[in-house]
Amino acid sequence: MVANSIGIIDQDYCGDEDEIKLQVLNFSEQPVTVEKGERIAQGMLMRIEKVDEFVVHNNMSEVSRGGFGSTGGHNEED
Image (tube, rainbow, N blue to C red; front, side):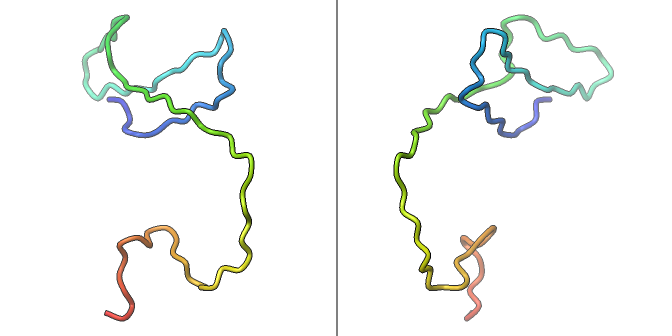
């Protein structure tokens, strides 16, 4: 089994000796062999743009602006 999760590889991970490895787990009692060229994982490469300028706002008016789990949450007035 391959864990269903996200791994992030930093942009400077690009040397000749660098390797990307995958952790897998065999839940069966039988040995499992993964042959060279077998497809057992997927990857997605994304360009990360460098931010040259940003604006800092120190005048947030509401005390409660959400947080983890705040989208689609309950309404206190209901």
